[in-house]
View 1 (spheres, rainbow, N blue to C red):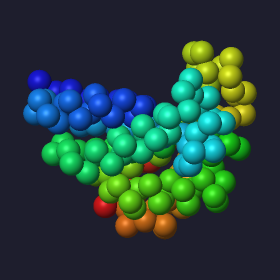
View 2 (tube, rainbow, N blue to C red; view 1 turned 135 degrees about the vertical axis):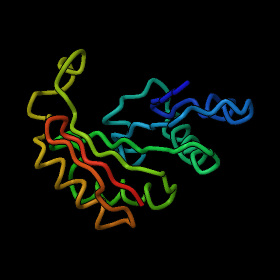
View 3 (cartoon, one colour; view 1 turned 45 degrees about the vertical axis):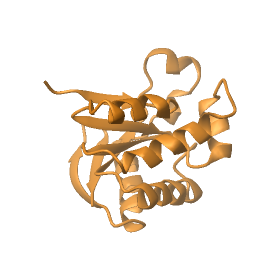
Length: 156
């Protein structure tokens, strides 16, 4: 059976339980939109103050997993694509060493349309530029691109 688990990372105890039960997924994705505690509060509007810390615990746990791990950076044009944000994402990647980094565009669909403007949805070329900047600041190289999906894949 193949299981790809995608999480916001705010429940590190759940990841720890999977490790303890030897029930790791085939691949674990952790979605990222913020690069520090302040940006996390602004972009994610968490219901609890502790959730940035919980995310950090989940990122730390990724290094103990046997399965491939992916940090999925969702690019929000004008919100998390500036040099400070890119440096922050690059620092997280360098610190926690996921197997892959997926840089993808925010898509203006569903409930998110009530929170964000369509202008927050970046073009493929913009996503590619962000991915190239992350690559330059880490030991990760671009290994795949899909223009239609507005996604770029990096690997160490």
